Amino acid sequence: SVPSALPAASSAAAKPRRSWLLRSHSVLPGFSLSLGITVLYLSLVMLIPLAAVFVTTSQLGWSRFWAIATDAQVVASYKLTLGASLVAALLNAGFGLLVAWVLVRYDFPARRLVDAMVDLPFALPTAVAGIALTALYAPNGWIGQYLPFKVSYTPLGVMVALTFIGLPFVVRTVQPVLQDLRQEQEEAAAMLGASRWQTFRHVIMPHLLPALLTGASLAFARALGEYGSVIFIAGNQPFKTEIAPLMIISRLEEYDYAGATTIAVVMLLISFVMLFLINLLQAWASLRTGRAAR
Image (tube, rainbow, N blue to C red; front, side):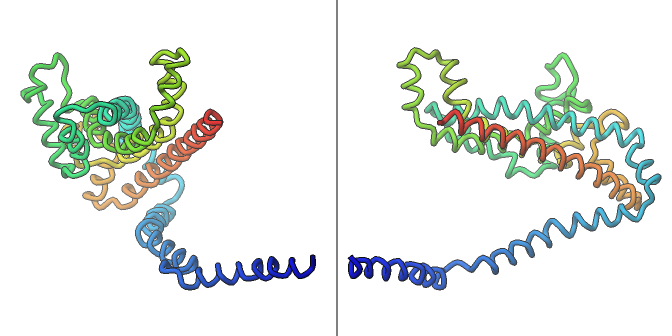
């Protein structure tokens, strides 16, 4: 029995050496080098600029910071930006799911054209998008002249612009999940007597929920910082249609760097809090989906 155990021991001892040889001859760089490049890149692109904003704001006294951050005109821009971004993200979650469902589950003649048009807000310059939306929804525009209510130069116009630029995030996040979803599960649910609504709610939606929340959160984050497509259709009326990014640009044009950085810090903190809550919601949805799969 002892000699028979020797080959097994020798083979077990050879495995770590073989794996070490594979690691040493890997084409990709090692963990230390990869981590260093990643940290350097993130520092140059994100951490250092964000730290500069906080450092500039920290030079102000608390009283001056609070006075700038709670100015009535600035607070009105916070409310419009957050409210319009949230409504746009919710609309994109519903209609983005519908668009992704149609593109994946149905075959029609203009399917590729519609699929390509989804990416139009990605390729179109934001200023061009703002001018196009204003031309469409202005009181004398192609669509606005037939509407019984005013869209351009109102908060509704801001929501229209933010919905336009955020739709691709939801569609492109949900679409791959729908494509990978096996239809055998839906057929099994139908054979067991489930209705279409029950199949969608209990079989399909648990798999789509994490991706749907991710796409909606990306659309919300994009809407918070959107500027080019909003300023034309908003009209930029004080206390009515001014967004927070416009307030930052206005302070910079007035060489009020303290005011600009203060508004930027407040928006950053709000964004971090909202994204943290959305990530918690995504984690809950993932756990719920995993339990449902079991």
